Image (cartoon, rainbow, N blue to C red; front, top):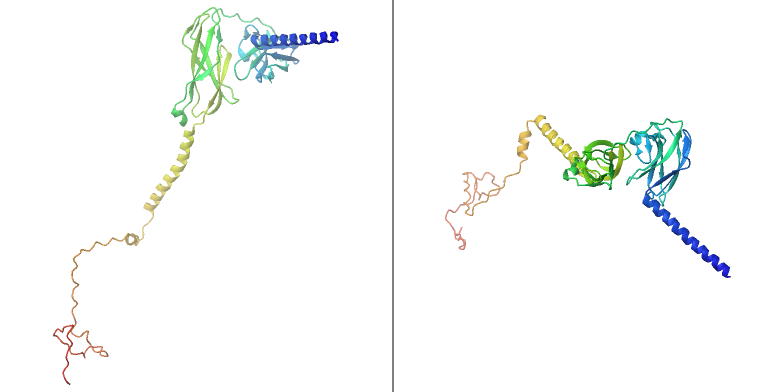
Length: 360
């Protein structure tokens, strides 16, 4: 019984020690940065090699290339122009930042020494190299490393600034690319020239030279601000890249809003211009068409009637109608000519006193 207890205790201790060792190894790999290893150190063109990696960011897209004129210490001289880009492979790291990918071996466009170059495609820049001997490919010594300064990135890039109101109406969006660099060489760096490129979607970036005016002494660092400007009316997802001495240093995403002022302008234009053309056309037709003779008279008759003038309070008596000699209002019925009439009494009679007739 006691023997079984001791065995269980030693098993628990061994498990704890294994856990501590694995944690220490993982921590060391994370501190040392990404690591790349190959299944074989030598392969011929047309063969393949398995590339294993660890210590990368989780769920990160990587690009694997066979490059010439490169060493792990100096990197790839000439950038991706020294790599077999047509035979590269892409891989995504797992949740622990590891990957394993089969890569075909191709001859790079420049002589060896050669490496398998692994670098991130998006996000913060990270890269690692593993030495690979390509059998049958020529080998040439590397160019001498300059004894002057050597520029290195010390911080991530960011876009500073904001666009004005005119950008809402299609003006070119502009920002400032801000980053910190340091001089790790033995000589001073004066007025370095960077290359800033902007790419939309999957298209290749368009590079522009941007010179930073200043002197960076050995062991010193400085904050650099470079202007970035897109074309007029640009909108969507863009990627701003930074390159120095043929090597891409960083990439920064940039989401540009749609210029809704331009859309509003076109909507108003589509409404106003047809209405103006219709009004002009109707005015031309009204002046050119022939007039009918009664058109003016009809126009006059269709005018609004004039309002009657207000009458004065003092009214004049209506004019008396003259009585014709052959007509009398007291004519006898049956005598249309009015020749027979009743006797007319010229004397006024009182409305209250009756008329007295004499004996017949």
